[in-house]
Each structure stands twice: as structure tokens, then as C-alpha cells.
Length: 324
Length: 288
Image 1 (cartoon, rainbow over the protein chains, first blue to last red):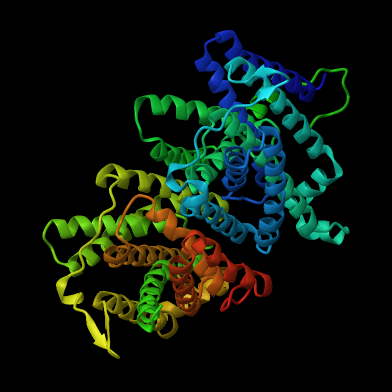
Image 2 (image 1 turned 180 degrees about the vertical axis):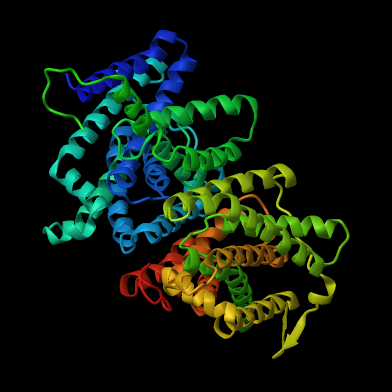
């Protein structure tokens, strides 16, 4: 076994244990934390496509989660849609929105891209906040009912958690397939060597644009899970702080790694939960954690752990292939 | 809607444009020189307004409040530049993320110190005399804000275009390595420009206090406006910031009065047009 395969095995084992932990603990409190971590993980994985694999740092990603959640809320509350029909429409809306916003934001690269995504994200916040006839403004939209699935009532925390695990595994496997696909590989190529990729005949802009839409789509999926869990949506959910929070998850966990955003999501959600229990200064801590992570641990937790494991697990002799 | 309404709204738009200029000229200079998109800039503006408020409440005058806010924010900016950003030199993304983290920290500390209630800074009486012209009455304070922004614009322009210091700044913007090579102390320029930009934002906050008032979330509302201004006007250009600020001021003010729900959306239309046809902005030299 190469150390890479061993690391994969260890990661999968740890992941399964982590997913089982809330069920073993048994109390709804822990199970609900588990659901929140998984929703955040799907959200962070979607941003990781841009930040990690595409090298495009977006500070407006909450707009997609929030818009998707708002569409579901509006359609179920005011237009008599069922939850799943509303979700399908929400995904359509988010994909169109990502296609438009992506076309605008990708006029710039690097810091300009970042500034445009921030501005576009705040636009959506502005709409949710100001268009109060429809969105309820600062009051948000409460009382969205959790749907049934195959006749099971998802209000039961354990069942909801099981659905979230299924959704998370689909997202994770989908993400893995994406990173190995031609599109995913050329996206990573455009991150590292945009000019060479252009020379080699790849349409750099198009690759980035498609990646932007895929990222928006998965953020929309996270938004549906979010509204399903909370049953409530507020403009804050698509604001700057939420966009920064998910970016922190990606960076803290390790951008450009498959499990980095998942670990980052777990750290941030649990930290937020613990801190909020004692003090009401979450935003201050979020800011300080951000500064500390960027300065002290710029590559994130997962790459650091990976390096540690590689030094602890030397190569087995009879396996000739070197793992770099 | 009468002519008076349009005139008054135009004056409001000009005043907002002036405030946006104070906010975004510093942002633009810092970006042009150091390639740092200082995402704490909105927070500097808000903190400046709060500092000004406290100085006013302590019984000092409006001018003292503006100066105090300018100094406090300049010192804060200087410390951030010296102890955080300089450690991350040449790591642009890390610098931007640090400024974002600091923006949250500053905003939460403001909430802690000054509570969550919106507070209005009183405009000094000698500045708020109504001005009568063309048979209409205009609020004098807004005229004052416009005047201040024009004076600051002229001073900044003179500083950048007509002094040796400005020449060094321009040289560093164009080619930092060559500038260092001929002996320009780029590091000191960075510190100076960062403090100057921070001070302008802080003073802008006090100046804007009587119009916008100050409340948690003001930072998050001003920051995107500053971004739009620099994207419109072109990064690192004082003239671009000036024109961009007034365009943004007009679009946002009229958007807010005519279509309040979508004022933000309307704001981004010109930005999109500019990005589509001139990605480097109206006055920008080349894409960053």
C-alpha cells in the first residue's frame, strides 16, 4: 500500500466515524449539529470549486445559498408549491443567476474578481433586505415546513440527519468525480497556468464560467437543505458575513483538497455553536480567526495533517510506485 | 414631482458622491500602490463616524470630531499596515483576507462599544443654515459636504501630480521594482498612503454622520459602494474615483427614491456596462 492509499483509507474511516458520532450520542442536540455541519460542508465544498480548484476567490457565495432558500420559501409560502417542486425551481433560478453573475465577475481576475463577487453578493442582500413586500425585509420569511420524504416525516432529527448524510455523500462523490474529470483537471490547469492552458487550446474563460455555474448549483443545493433545516430565511443568510464564514471554512480546512472544506465546516460550525453558548461575540471571533488562520495556517488544516501522516507512514517496500 | 424635488435629490446625490469620494479615493490609492483591496475600508468609515460621535458627545466641536476621527483611524491603519499587512508582503490574497477579517472584528467591537441603535451625528449649527438659491431652499450641510469633497479632491490631485512625494507614488504604482531600484522608499510610501487613505475614510465617516447617521451595518453598505466606485473609475486613479463617486452617488440616490427595493441592483448596471466594455474602468490604465 502506498501512503496515499493508506491516507485515503484513514480519511474514509475517520469520515464514517464522524458521521456516525452524532447518532451514537443519540440526543437531538448532537444530531442537529451534525445536520448543520453537513449543510455547511456541502456549501463549503461548492465554494471550494472556485477557491480551491479554480483559484478564484469569491466573497459573494452566500448569495446563491440565500437566493435558493428564498425561492423555496416564497414559492411554498405564497404560491402553493410543494417543497420539492419549489426546490427544482430554486435550482433553476440559481443556475441562471450563477450564469449571469459569473459572466460579469469573470470580466476580472484575481482581486477584481473578488471585488465584483462581493459587490454582486451584497446586491442580493440589498434586494432581500429592501424588497420587503416580497421578502419580508428584516423580518425574513418564517414557517417553511420541513417536507416528507417517501412518507417519512423529516421533522424527526435523526431522519433529517440521514437525508443530509445521503445528500452529503452524493455531493462528496460528485465533487471527487468532478476533480478527476476533464473539466475539473482543466480548471486546475487554468488555476496554475492560465496562459499555457490557453496556448494548449483550452478555453480558459469558458472552463471558469462552467465551474462558476457548478459552484452556484451546489450552493443552491445547500440552500435547499438550509431552508429545510431551519424553516426560516433572513437577509443575513446571504450577506457578507455568511460569505466570509464559508470562505473561512474552505481556507481553514484546506482549499483545493476534497475533505478540507468538510473539516473546515465542522470546525467553524462547532466553534460557532460553542462560542455562542457563552458569549454573543461570534462576529468578532470570526474576524480574529480569519486573521489568525491566514497568517498562521495559510494552507489549512487538511494539507497540514496530510503532510504529518505522510511522515508518520513510510512507504511499504515492495510497492515500487512513488507517491509524491 | 416638482423641480424642487429633483433639485433637492440632486443635491443629496452630490453630497453622497462627495462622501463616496472621501471613502474610495483612499481605497483606490491603497489599491493602486500596494495591490491591497482593503476590505476594512467600510469599517474605517463606520468607526470614524463612531469616534466622531463620541468626541461630539464629550462636548467638542465638529471640526475637532473630524480631526480626531482622522487621527484615530490613521493610527489604526498604520498599526494594521505595520504589524499585519507588511508580514504578508507579496501575498495579495492573504492581505485581502486579513483586511476582511479585521472588518468583522472592527464592526463587532463598534457594536460592543456603541450599542446597536442607529445614532445621528448632529450637524453643527454654523454649517446647517439653509441656503436659498433660485427660489428654492437647500440644506446647507449638504452643500458643505460637496465643497469639502471638492477641496480634498484638489488637494489630493496636487499631492499626487505636483509634489515630489506624489511623483514617487506614481513611479511606484507604475513599476515598483524600478522605483525601489532608483532609491524610492516604497515601504514608507506604503505606510504613508495607507494611513492617509484610512484617515480619509475615518473623516468621511464623521462628515457623513449627519446625513447617513451611524448604525451597525453601515460598513457593509458603504464597502460595496466603494468597490463600485473604483471599478467604475479605474483603480488607483484620483480623477476616476472622483467621477466614479459622483456617478455612483447619483445612481444610488435616485435609485433609492424612485425604486427603493432595487436601488442596489440599479447601482450595478453601470458597473456591468463598464466591465463589459472597459474592464479597467473609465480612467484606469490597464487591467490589474
